[in-house]
Image 1: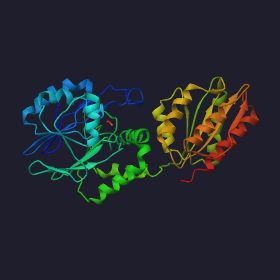
Image 2: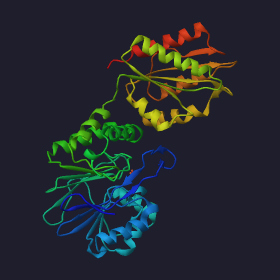
Image 3: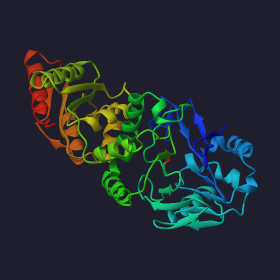
Image 4: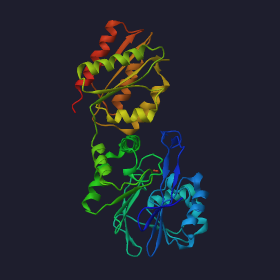
Length: 397
Ligand code: FEO
């Protein structure tokens, strides 16, 4: 399948309708995804990126239906991760001498993964490649989200090829942002940002400011996953600027795990406390072991405050919580308050463990952790409501 996007650009990627997990088992992709590769034709012909390795043979066969491979003058690899570079080894067997334009860090990652020595041409911000009427301008974008990441701007059609940035895991043959459900699209975008780009928010902000300062007209943003932004393409750039600045909505998220429902009762009472104090604040209650971890992270990203709850087991916490807490630690959320709670039978270490984890992860501890022995009674539930009210008072948006 190929798809003409502009007079010069064709989409030659792969829609992965059924993908449910990405980055190994780390990221849920309930809506599938796409690996977007683009073929640019001017006086020279350029392939920008490829697709995930399992689709390599299919990609090359399809590409042959769109272009004689011998007509490809340049390959551009904006990012070495396998979902975009995975078909290059198969392709480069057919066109081994074609120059591969990429960042120096991308050379390292491609060599490291595929043990190849292609005709690499390293480029950085300010370097250009004239292809006829059009010129490709490269923009290094390190850590958005790998050290090798790069953008490429093409004049005449005014396209920003942004690779992972501004992408989203959404499989659609509608191809363009104005043809898909805007709520679904934005939900996938914020999930992508929350789970992948949060640690690099300072760099996101600086890179966007740098690109905006170039004052380039942008009619299309063509990311490497999901649909192409053609209707008000800068709307996603504006969203990124918001999300990069310690984003908060008027929301509190309560996430927890519970052995025998006692900590669940506490979680729901904490949520009641939030609502009682601030009826205008949205509360999300999420069971950490039963709900999707990336969805929990997305809700935490949107929250001004969180409550983390867990029973005690073997002097520790339940395994359903550890995965979420480990993700939270790595993502480095800023400007969020937190409190811990949990029911226990005898030793009751879980609340302190949660509190330490939240504190080490950069959350401001808003209230002393709340431990309830066995099943919370009326008084215990009231303490939970007070904890929720305390968190609600931390919401300033
Ligand atoms: Fe879509 Fe960083 O790969």
